[in-house]
Amino acid sequence: MKKLIVLAALVISTVTFGQEDHKEKREHHKKGKMEMMKDLSPEQMATLRTKKMILALDLTKAQQEKMHALHLEGAKARKEHMKNRAENRGAEKPKLSSEEKYQKMNSVLDRKIEMKSKMKSILTQEQFQKWERSQKQSRNKKKKHHMRK
Image 1 (cartoon, one colour):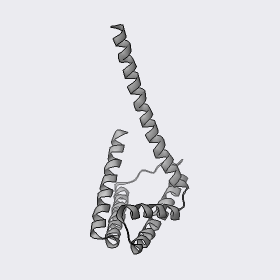
Image 2 (cartoon, rainbow, N blue to C red; image 1 turned 180 degrees about the vertical axis):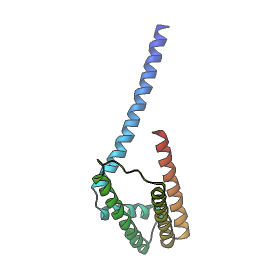
Image 3 (cartoon, rainbow, N blue to C red; image 1 turned 45 degrees about the vertical axis):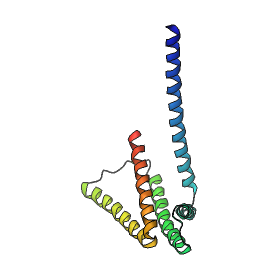
Image 4 (cartoon, one colour; image 1 turned 90 degrees about the vertical axis):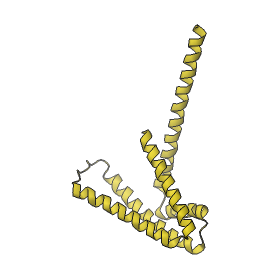
């Protein structure tokens, strides 16, 4: 009986420590990726995103150039947004009114609609469908990740 209790305690402690280590590695990996992206210039970020799309969607030269320009525009906007957030990090967040929240959400959706229409004009029908599937998968991963927290 005593051996059984010791064995059960050993199994439980092994499983518990193993899960903590896995979670810690996942968080470390995510932080490392974000830190790396923070140090890149918008041009470098755009190049990397474009190359990922080239691999995933087999883009033509003309499509590659258009995608790079699109990604560069987005990378510059993200870099500016990151800079503004870093400057305001210590400051208290202002309380947004319902109208301001609506305007903010509306502008985000407008940007998404614009991005989708640009992608549709650059990509072929098959490439666009593949891109939409990858976007959906990425959103699902983000949802699952937020649910775990």
